[in-house]
Image (cartoon, rainbow, N blue to C red; front, top):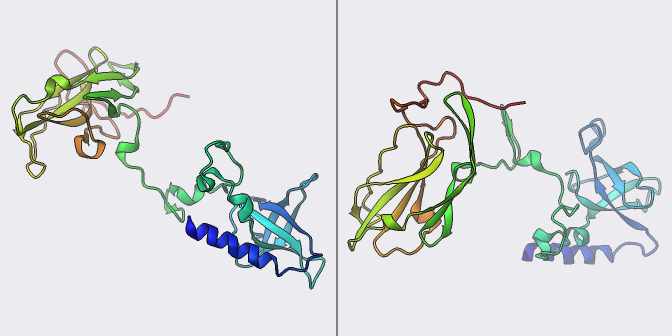
Length: 278
């Protein structure tokens, strides 16, 4: 945050050097034909000026930001009056963005954060300049997460069973009965969705030593179920810690256990993975 406001002060000091008769206006960089910078004119960028008419034009932009949506300061060149140029990022406007100002009353879709999703995306054969890795824990469906005390919340899930599309609406599960009754003991408890009756259940693993350096046994995944999470429970525990007590049991694709004799399908038995119903 200090670096940001240092830049803001430097910009203000820089502005005082301008000719007082020079008119500086505000605008933002935009894309035209899918690009901010004109392909055959390096350093010339498309700008939309904030005014009654919202003029769109090319402006000379050397060394400045070239990301669509960035608020900028624009002026005519003092040497070549017909030349419009981008002077700098408009930090006064950018500072109003709630992620920088810390003001929770600002609208969540405040327009001065540049559109920049491409820089975070992974695509086939290439990726953006700041790609984001999404880990399994961030995926919501059937995620087990902290509720209160030794109760957990399980997120909703859509899945296929016995040829039908089924929806689990989500719910809570009290795991307090699985707390070990012996001092210095701990166990893992598996939360899972039973596809036979579309309910969330839990199964306890064997007791082990309450020592993070000693691995605890994982309970087996029941037949015809979709595993959710291995939850660690120790003697005397009264609440959960996300990083310490939750271990993912879900599979990103498929994710069922072997089918029981009474019905259900396993990953091995399914010849397709459904994608989307249109």
